[in-house]
Length: 570
Image (cartoon, rainbow, N blue to C red; front, top):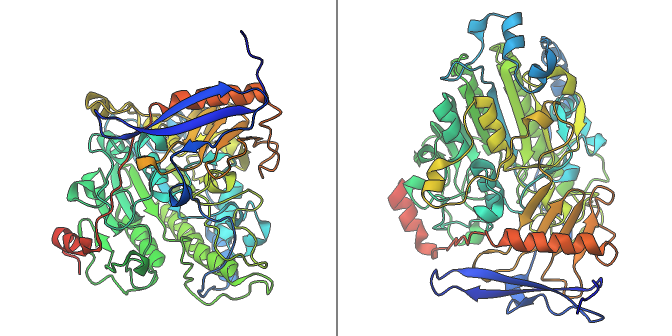
C-alpha cells in the first residue's frame, strides 16, 4: 500500500553504541505518519544532556573607548590612496592576476610561491563571538566607533551568507582543516581537554607552507593543547604567540576561574611568553605582534598570517571606560563595542603597515567571526540582541549562532567586485580549498585519506568571490549533527534557500525556514513545504552517517600539573 505524505513527519533519533568501535553513533529512521502527533525526538536523551544555552540577553561589566575622530582622520589620510591596478579579462576575474600585475609593475616586486606562481599574502583575521549586530555594515550607527572596519567592508566584499558552527572549537577546526564540523569536531574544548585534531589531517597552514608561504599564528588557538604535537608550531605554523584555551583575562592572561584551575595562558611557540604577561590589553599585544611580523617579513615571500582576537568573547572586558556612546546603550553593548574598537585599530595598523611596505596590493584580507554572539542571562530590556535581527545566538543552530559576519579586503581583490555584497553561501571550511587554489596547490588531503580519515569537504569559492561566477558552489551543507558521547545538540542543514532544524528541546515539531526570505526564522514551513522537508530530512540522514565521534574528555582539575610539566607553566 502506498502512503500519501502527511505534513507530520516522525523523526526518531536514538543513540546506540557500537560494540566493535566503542563509539556512540546515531541510528536514524524516518517514517511518514498519518494523522498522529510526532513522538519524542530523542529517545534516551533528556535533562542536561539535551540542554542548550538560554536565548536571553544580559550584560557583563567592563570599561571603554578612545575618540574615533583620530582614527577616522588617520584612515582618511593613509587608507584611501591605494594605487588602482588594472584587472583585465576573465583570467583576472578568476583570480589570475599574474598577467595583469606583470603588465603594470616590476615582476620582481611581487610575492611568488616556490613554483614561481604569483601568490598573494593572506591575512586571516578571526573575531571571537562577534554577533551579526556588532558590525557596522549590519548596524550603521557603529560606523562612528568602528571606522576602519566599516570602510574596509564597504570598499571590499561583504559576505552576507557566511556560515560556521555555533561554538568556537568546531568552527576553528573546520576553518583550518577544510572539513565540515561533523567531520572533525562538534564539541567546544574546555581547559585540560585531551582532544586535538587528528595528526594525519593536514591543516591549511601546512598546505601553504608546502607552497612556499611563511606561516604565523597569533591569538586564540582552542583546538587542542594536551600534547606538544597538538600545538600550532607542530601543525604547520612557523611561529605562535597567543593562548591555547577558549578565553583568558584580558589583563592578566589567566584562564577563567570557572574552570577551577587558574593558569597563565600566554605562549610563544610552545614555551611561556616570559616578560609579556601583564604587559597590556591582550588584543593590543596581539596587534603589536602582527605589526612586528609584517614589518620584518621579506616582501617577496608570500605570507599567511592567522590572527585570532580575544574580542568579543565573554566576559566583556573593555580596554577603556566607554565614552561618547549613546546613553541608551546598555553597559554590555558599550563594552562589546569598546572591545571591537581594538580590532578596528588593529585593522588600521595592519593595512597601514602593508601599504608602507608595498604589500597591500598583493594582499587578500579575510575578516570573519567564529560563531554568533553569546546571549547573556538574565535578559536586559535595554540590551538588544547582539545578533539582531537574526534569531538565537552562540550554541544554537539558528542563524544568530551560525551565520557569521564577514568581509574581504585587500589589493588582491579584483576591482570590479570591490564595494559589493556577496549573497552566495560560503562555509568556514571553504577557505581551505580557496586558499589552496591561490597558492597553486591541490587541496586534497592525501595523508588523511591514506590514514583512513575523511577527505576534505572544502569547495574552491574563488570564482564566486572574484566575480567570475554568480552562484556559489556551496548549496548544500550540514551545519551541525549529533554531538559526541550522546550529548544532544540542534541538528541543522541548509539546502539552497531552506534550512531545517531538528531540536531535541522542541518535542512537538521540526522546523523548516526559508532563510533568505525569513532570516529571523519566524515562520516555520515544516507543515507547508512538505516535499522540501522530506527531501532535506532524507539528505540529513545520509550525511550524518559519516559523522565522526569526537571525544573531548576533560581531565580533573589536577591538569594544572600536566600543563606545568609539558609547558613549564609559570
